[in-house]
Image (cartoon, rainbow, N blue to C red; front, top):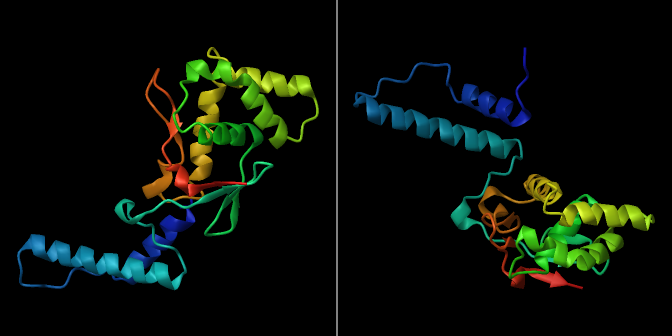
Length: 194
């Protein structure tokens, strides 16, 4: 039997505690009103149970505001308000830093013209000493025939989901249409460069 993820089990547990297994009480109202009342009761019970278990409730997109990033000279990235470091693989971090430095955006097909800058960023981030290996990695990243840049952007998004709510994640990831400049839409007032 497949086990449910922890958050799904907690949700189901809260529903059962709220009386999901009991038939709805006779309200003497029409069925639509009765259903809304039951849903509201269950929703309230789930929120209460999540609070008891110390589970943070996701923020709504319209109430979410971006968090400030502090980027050190050696390209460590911290969430200022939390004092937490965002940990990324070296090439993924290189892509993130590069696009944070280019608010105007850069089309993927023009990444080749930025090889030196990418090399400079990556060589400061990675612990590698083999210059040929560094050059090969940056070569793949900037090669329009290679899928490396797309892979790194995908990994970046999935990693950042561990740090940001759905309501703000789109401000931190690299986006843009085919052939258009790709950019990170985060307002640069939220970035502190050391």
